[in-house]
Length: 213
Image (cartoon, one colour):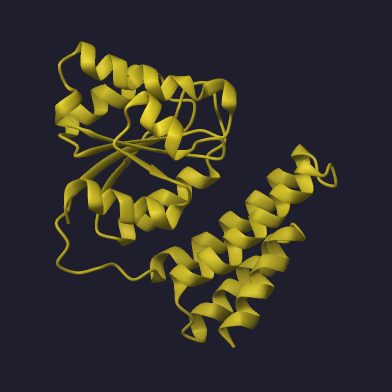
């Protein structure tokens, strides 16, 4: 039954159908389908198909945005039902999409899953000025600074933030976790990031490893 729900969610996202996505998500809740799996195996898989269609020029920006709206409609229904883990130390994470990039679907998923995983998440949004990552992390006494981008032209901004941390003698104070479409482990190593996450689920796992929980 769950597999059918996942497939319906994926299809609804690809078809840009907000109402259908919302209805299927509600059905998932009513049938006791794990909400986190519904997000990852349904909604996220749908957006992966959308990404492929965009690369093949079958979909363009307007279609991608409509698909994103459909996915977010499903997330709104499912988010309250994602099981929060009890007994987890509330480590603090500051996350955002680096300056110059406005793609925040992946970042939004990371936020949802990290909150479900027991983290206290401070979401700076998208196109975030680089200094703001550091200023907010200092303000809230964060454990982790998380940065994402889907654009190769803004990748180097992540390294700039790390350089800025070093310049302010704050590098040892925060763990830096990065992710996004063009990001790789080798790039993370090159700029001196503490961790790299290829997707939202692994971002939660990596964050735990970084804080030793």
